[in-house]
Image 1 (cartoon, one colour):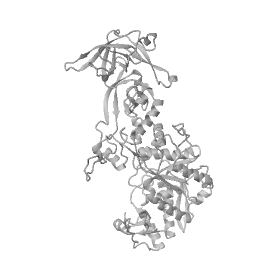
Image 2 (cartoon, rainbow, N blue to C red):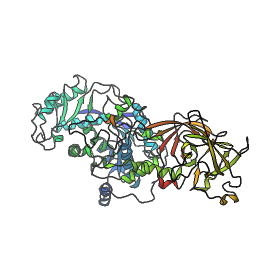
Image 3 (cartoon, helix red, strand yellow):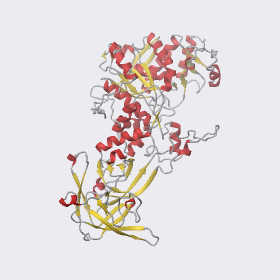
Image 4 (cartoon, one colour):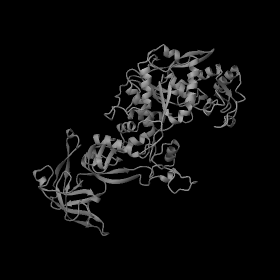
Length: 630
């Protein structure tokens, strides 16, 4: 693991000795915090308003921090916390992060950066049956890739909830000692029935009035492994008549005889997420615990639990505050973990890092940029209302970033041979193209021109349609960065398919030469030299689904029709072509990004590209408003 217990001390509570972990920081690692992709100040929102009000009131000004997670006494012995706020990103390591997580990462780390605070990366690994180190490593990589860090020369705020299990047991025993928790021996079905409904109050468990001594004895025997899974469960004692079902004596600890990826076989009882989450926040001195709206109904229990533990002097005040915002809902995408697993396991995609997947590993392989995600997160903002965000907003953010950063290159995706009949055999000359039209300081590159070139098949029509400005017999066009040519005809095979186009060039018309201005043409063709270019695999990716709401109802559907989201898979979500590329692209390394003029933005695949033989993925197509910069 990335950090372990260094040693342990003993926390004494009501005569019970509980081991409390001490943490060691890793060595310092300096990382550059990301610059805001927009020059404008961050837009205000309800979360920023809450933070502004808290800071203005000095709510957290006297909060102390010992330098590591711990109970109230430990924190009170520390200095005043230099971080004005503390936020956290707490993923469960049971899968790969997706686009919705990117929004949460940008929000939590961004707020900490903007307010002179700290954001913790905490792995919420309290479920031993679903979590793996593979996911831990992928999450760490994804957060770093997005441009954020939890560590600098002063603090290393990388934590694992499983390292808090001793403290969580101490908190559970505190609730038992104060009469706020009891051990229940009912079955899961009996507890479900007894919980009641939205319109009917719940019923007290027959075990609700067990004595403190009996509850403590049973809970410690649960910890000792005396009972099988499901035999007992620890419940908070709140109010079985509460209109909020989450307050009807929720379960807080269960028996699970399972090996944990971090703690091994040390534990056979594990906390429920709703119990563990607020305790983790309090141990880490979190000021603003920001989560999505599905946790709004759990906030009363979050507050109740921390109040009971603060009353027992386990945590310092002010206590963490939970704040909810709407999760990311994106058109043409599914973010349900169940559906993503189905896509992978049924091989509708080629793994979690398939560039069509809405995972961050997939996005990175597709060529999406961290800066684009941060710009997108800033633009969609945060609110309390659910809404469907158009996928085009994400694509536009990626285009905007890559338009500024990606050097230009030429690729012919559907090649047709163009023969310049009056160009000498074996002769070559260089044409010069800017590496970036908006950045002249990046200079130009040489593009060798010879007698035979590759052009796009759509750039020739034997019988032109109305308004067609490219090659057809008798028409003149300019070879981009090169000469004006005039089409003289074409060759066909036995099936009547066009296999080559013929033209002659005007020697005094070369771009950049004095004679270039003598020729006015309306068409401009991209090209690659047959003798000097090279062939490569290029994957043209599109959206994985063909409808904005995969699996959703369509107009005309029968009222009782249940649609499968897999029915909306786009059969053309990836097309593999053998393209011809200009010579300089042979030197592209994994994750190098370019704009292929006229076609879009492409990246050299981070896994399949080899030295001298890159494989390119299309990240996003061009749009008309950017075409002028190509």
